[in-house]
Every structure is written in structure tokens, then in C-alpha cells.
Image (cartoon, rainbow, N blue to C red; front, side, top):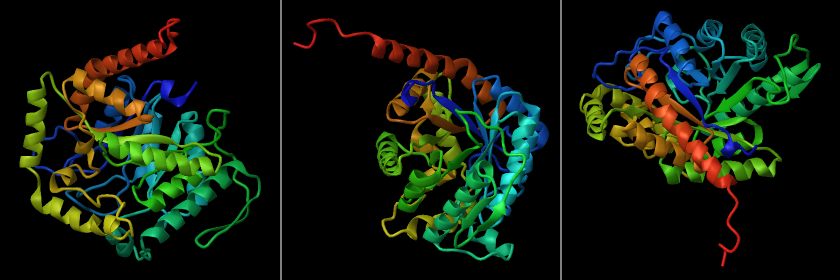
Amino acid sequence: MPENEKPLKFAYWVPNVSGGLVVSNIEQRTEWSYEYNRELAVLAENNGFDYALSQVRYLASYGASYQHESTSFSLALLLATERLKVIAAVLPGLWHPAVLAKFMATADHLSGGRAAVNVVSGWFKDEFTALGEPWLEHDERYRRAEEFIRVLRASWTEEAAEFAGDFYRLRGYDLKPKPLSSPRRPHPEIFQGGNSTAAREMAGRVSDWYFSNGKDFDGISEQIAEVSAGAARHGRTVRFGLNGFLIARDTEAEARETLREIVAKADIDAVRGFRDAVRQAGGSTADRKGMWSDSSFEDLVQYNDGFRSRLIGTPEQIAHRILEYKRRGVDLLLLGFLHYHEEVAYFGEHVLPIVRQLEAEADSSAATPEPIGSRS
């Protein structure tokens, strides 16, 4: 079955860092504790979510004063759920990829094959320098991230793996047990983000999934076309995830007012600090395609440009917009919310059924043969 005919998948950002998913002083009935997140994970898998993504932070930043470590937190959520796949974000440079491969293989066995990883090249310089690690320039970080993924995959799939790169080396590394494997999923899924040319080219060469920051229809279509073309040159296919901050309310006016209040109550100093920290990420690329290169102040209040996907309105409005993203090649939506428990349940009850209905109608329409003589 072609990917665009499969049901769209949904993921949510795990709030394992304090401050919620917007850099705002608006009330957020969201907590970063394990107890809150354990309940949320069960709630999410019972409301149509396929994946959860644990954030990686080693240092306070943009209003996130406290952070739970991503891999251990992800394993805890895997053990608290039955079906949910949990993606642990990791930073090359702070992990050796073969050591991570061992951790992930164990997590995969403990969870029955539900572990996944998101390889983040790293944009926050202070995290590396505070830990005494060297800071690499933009394209070098992506070269390292690509080697990281190659070592992960070799460790998971090869006997006595060998690798000789500029950043990592393997000398007959034989990981046992390997992760669980099947024809549909030969090893834990490898996700990767980034908007730059280097990120897009790397995704085409090595990643299973490409995550995009929040984009409108034209923005995501351009990324999908470029990454898919690059993957095809290497005989590969890549699936696509899109970030979006979802505000579903009974009326469009209520949803718009919530967005207005989030931005009006933005933590100005924190947003400006985040803007200054990420400015080099987009500006350090020659073609200025890097992440946050054209983000406005409003965009940065949701720190992965989630407002730009415009999943804001009534359930019907949001569902139709979601289907348009799917038509353009999006396979997964990675969602953030203001009040997680309430809004994840609202999504499952009010938004997702409309999405599935629209998908069924689109599939039925595509399968209906054109009447004879209608082409004249």
C-alpha cells in the first residue's frame, strides 16, 4: 500500500522539561513530572497517538529550567504503555553511537520492539561547552550526525561491525542481542530533524524519517520534494513528520483567542534569549535554509515554529488542514498542546474521528473507477 494511502500517524512532544511547549506566562496545565507523563502516555495511546518524542536538554534554556534525561525517560514511558512507540532524542557528541545502540537494543527488547531514536545534530552551543565538549560548526555537526546514524545502523544489523570515520570507529563490534527485527521494521526507527541543505541531504542518505519544524503547505511540499529526490538518488525512501502546535476549540474564535493570549503573554526575555541562541543555526548556512532562519518573534513563542502549521480552529477545520498535509506527503504529525491531558483527550474524541472519516472518503474516491465516457 502506498504511504499516502496509509492512515496518518500522530506523535506528541513529551513534556519532560519544565515550562510546557510554549515560552509564555499563560497558564499551562501541563507538568514535567514522571507521574504526569506516565498518565499522559496511557491517555495518548488510547486516543490515537502512535508515537511520543522525549526532548533532549542538558542545560536550562528558553524557560525550561528543569529537564529529565530523554533516554531513561523514554524507557520508563515504554514500560508504562502497551502500544505507544517512544522516540528518544539524542545528541551526537554527548553519546558514543555504539553505546547508545546497546541501550536502545535493550529498550527494544523490554518494550517488544517499540523503541526509536531522534538524532539531533545540536544547536545549543552552551550545552556542549558547559560539558567541556568541542563545538563544531553547522555542516560539521551534520557530518558527525550522519556518521552517528551509520554506526547505529551497523551496530544493529551487522555481525562484527566495522566503521572508519572522522568522528567514530568500530573494530569488529558485535552487539548482542540485536534489537528486535521484522520485514517492516528491521531495526529501531531513526528520526532526524533540520531544515538546512546539509540536513536534507543527510536525511536522503541515512535516515528513516525526516522531521520538519512547523511549515505551511508550500514550505513542507518543498522540503518533501527535495529530500525525496535526494533519497531516490541513493535508492532509498524517507518518511516525513511535521511539527505543529494544535489548538482545537469548539469555535474558531475560541481557538484564535487562545493563540492571541499565548503570544500576548510571551516570556519576552526567554523568547529573545532563545532567538539569540538559535540565530547562528539558521544564519550559519550559506543558503540560509537552516532552522529558525526566517522565524518571527511570534513563531519562536512555540520553539519549533509550531504555530506556522496553523492547526488552530474547530475540529473540522483542523481535520481538513491535516488531510491537506497528508496529500502533500506528510506521514506523521508531531503535536504540542497547551493543556496536555485535556487536549489530548479532546483530540481523540473530536478531531481524530473526522480525520479518519476524511481519509476513508479520500480512499473510497480514489478507488472508484471513472465512468466510461467521462474523459471526453
